[in-house]
Image 1 (tube, rainbow, N blue to C red):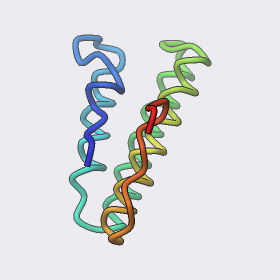
Image 2 (image 1 turned 180 degrees about the vertical axis):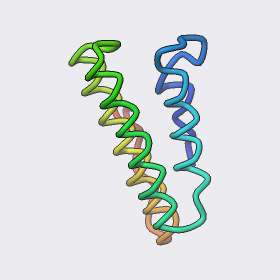
Image 3 (image 1 turned 90 degrees about the vertical axis):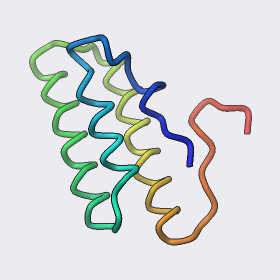
Amino acid sequence: MVKPQARLTDARDPVTAYLAKYTSLITESDNEQGVRLSTGHANGYLQALYDIHQIGPEVFERLKHVIEWTRQSRSNELAGLPELPYPGSPC
């Protein structure tokens, strides 16, 4: 599975650095419940950044789509389904 953390955010940016942690937790989850829980944390953190005006609407939407792709990709992997191409990739 492709790990999207590097594409998701710049870990040196203190505003979005935790998103890489949350996506890592999604990709390392052992079951569907762990995937849903980690995805909920990632979405909650992202929403909080948006609510306190640390990120703009375009960044919010882009990162929200990446979190959803990560969730769906890990769910597919756990179910034995084919991997999804990364958003924006030529595949």
